[in-house]
Every structure is written in structure tokens, then in C-alpha cells.
Length: 570
Image (cartoon, rainbow, N blue to C red; front, side, top):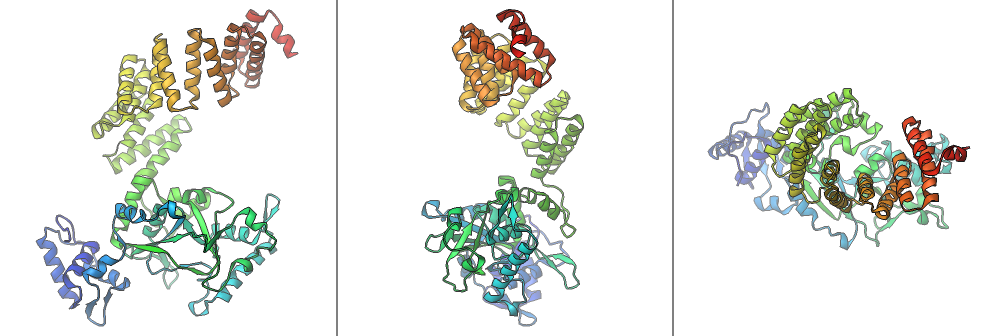
């Protein structure tokens, strides 16, 4: 039964009521409107406020879907309740995920394609360029060959000194929006879902642009890359005895061999969209399909952004994509919550006060957009901490804790604030809580270890640094700090191992060679110690670190005698 309680009458609800009340009947529009409004009200629903009646919008939508017919003033409703449940009709992200569970990777490789209109076929864009009456395989092949020929004539057929194949040229042309024989798919079902839910734009007769009705059902198509039908284009395949021109790949027969390739030049957009290109004929048949209910598209897009971070900015992360997202025809919308978080993160990476203030603006806007999510509070609190505006930071961390008292990051952030103020007892309590909430929180162990080391609790510090390293095997800072602790405990061999590991991770840090030289001296490995000091001295001079140059020369003279380092340097 349709759930109308406390909801306005909108096309999505009207569609459900029409199918429930009138399937298999022929009714006049006003009769349908009256009955739908009556039942909606009886079920606790609210009146509609739209300029166009939701029933009219729902009927238009379902007519496009082939389930309704309007012979004159009456609407003939073909769909029955049974028919509406036989298709794979998706209304929520969890429903979609459940549908995708049938595509088991153990049984083969699957790729997905999403389109905003279920009427669209899986066709190459080059095939759709001519007028519909002129479309045929011969024209399709000619268009692709003409593109390749023109590109070669203009010198667009080589890169990095290598001459491109026909396929290389077509892949590059496809990336920049040309109509080719290649058909875009994705290895990600949820990315295909995003494209099925995005709003489509079409040209009006006068040349302007309009948004097509976003209530149109979208579609996600699935193709299994069976070896009996598809061949992967690999460098070895292209090296064969036969020259692989476009004529080799495009065949008119419906049973001809098909191909797929992963673009060789992995730009940001291809990586973000997990792209794969299928080709071999102008039209492909899906193995499976599901249809996205038009009235639920916006809700699904919102859920995709919340759970997976999929937005236009993230799926088109290059200059061309940035320009396209901000084209004149694109409806301006306020940045999403996730986008505002991204903007703020990028701003604080510059570590400049002006950019910190800009980051605060982005995080504040995100909080106004959704005050019940903790991510923006934590980011803004950390930014306030960097600006030493501690009262505001504490207020943000308190808000985050109230929303989700089990989130370890909030306690960690507050611990960093207390540590920065020198309130070590409060900081340790916060790190303890963060670790209780998340026993895998390596940075909390590291930070607590820092404080224990500063408080001369070296055994506790050693335990914390060791745990941080266990959780993150390339944790440079933890190796270095543990090396200092081991040196203080006179465990020189172990300290040597830690400093050596840090040098492997970051080979241009002066302090690493400086400290390892001291450990080597205590181990009576004097020649190696001398070489490490010389390396540290050389790095200090290259980096123009006058203080370290002076410190190293003093240590050199204390250990190896006067003028030794200078003589070696000369």
C-alpha cells in the first residue's frame, strides 16, 4: 500500500496510487485526479502545491514508460499490479545493491552502463550522428574511419614519440567528447547508477537548452565479458601479425566478435569513473537490466553522495570536466555537503592563515546544510585548533560528541587540542577514550606515546609507538620516535634498526642520519658513524640549515677530533 501519511501529493506517490486504483481501466483525467486526491487524504497525506498537478505529471511519466495510453480525453491504463512488479524496478540504493548481488565476480567479469532514460539503447554515439533514416552499419564505419583519417592529417596521431593505432586515436577522441564507435561502461555498478539518475538536458527547437523531466525512468544495463564473445585489447593482442585497423574490429554481423579495453592513458576521469570501453558493433545487447523509478532519482543521488561520495566534481576531476560542470546550461545548485567538505580540506592543505579562514567558511556552510553529521564539526574544530581558537574548537567537538558519542575521531581531535595547549592529563584521557572506541587507531597511540615520552614515561611511550607501528607498518614518525626511546634505553641495536627504517622511508632527513650516527658510535661502528655524520652534514648544507651544520660539526669534533669533517669535505 502507498504510504501517504504526512507527505505532500507528489508525482511519485500519485503514480503508485494510479496503478493501485485504476490498473486495467479507462478513466477521464479529472476522475483520476479526484480519486487519487481523496485516497491520499484518507491515508493522512497532505495536498499538493505544484503548479502542474502531480497526477498529470505521473500520467505523462507512465505514458512514456509504455504503461498508459491517452487515445483522447480518456486515459487507458494498460498496466496491472502484477506487471508493475515483474520488471527490475528500483526505488532505493539498498534495492539496487541487492539487485547487483546476482553478478558474482567468481562467475566472470561484469561491466555496467547507466543512462537517464530507459528508452535509450546501448548504441555507439557515432551511430547516432546521422539522421535516423540514414543510420546503417556502412555509415557507422565511414564515420569512424573519417575521424581517424582527419586526426592523422592534423597530426593528432602520436604522443611521447609513439605513433598511435586507430584505437588509440578513437579513445582520445572519445575522452574529449567526439562521437566514436566506443561505448562507455564502468566496472562500478554504483557509478552506473549515478549516471542513470543524473538529470538529462536536451535542445529545444529554438536552440536553447532545457532539462528533460527528471521523472523519466533511468536504466542500468549489465554485460558479462564472456571470453566466448569478448576479447580484451591488450598490448600483446595489438602486436599480432595482422594490422589491427578499425576495419578489423567493426563488423556488421550481430554475431561478430566484440572487444573491450581499459584506456591506456589513465587520466583522473577514467580512474574516477572506473571506465572500460566496449566496441565491435554499433549496438550491444544487455545481459541484464534494471529500471530506476524517475521519482526516486534525486533521493538515490543523495544517498550515493552520502555513502560513496559520488558527485559531478568527483566523477569529472579534470579541467575539462570542471568546465563542463560549470557550463551555462547547467543548473546552478548549492554545493553538496561532501563537496563543501572537499573544498575545506583543500584549503587547509596550504597551511596559510587566509586559507584556514576560507576552510572555516566551507565547514560552516556544510554544518548549516546538515547539522546532524559530525564530519564538518570535526574538521572545523581542527581548523579552530590550528588557529588557536580553542573555545570554538571545543564547542565543535562537543557538538560532534553529542551527535555520535561513539566516534573515536572526536576524542582524538580533542586530545590534539589539549596536547597543543600543554594539558597532558586531559589529552591522555581523550586518547584513551579514542582507543577504547577504536582499538585500531594508530595515530592515537602515537600521540599518546609522544606525551608519555615528554613526561619521561619511556616504557609506556615505547609500548605506544610499537602499537602504532603494528597498525601502520610505514609510520615514519612512529619509527623515529621509537628509535629515540630505544636510544635513551641504551638498546642501540634496536634503535639502529628503527632509524634505518626511517631512512628507507625518507632518505633526505638530516635528523635521521644524525641520530643513527650517534647509535653507531655507541655500537663502536665508528666508520659507519662517521659516514652518517658526513651525510647529515652534506644534507644540512644542501638545505641551507645553518643550525644543523653547526651542531653536526660540533659533534664531529667531539667524537672524531678537530677539523676531521672539514678535511673530509675538502
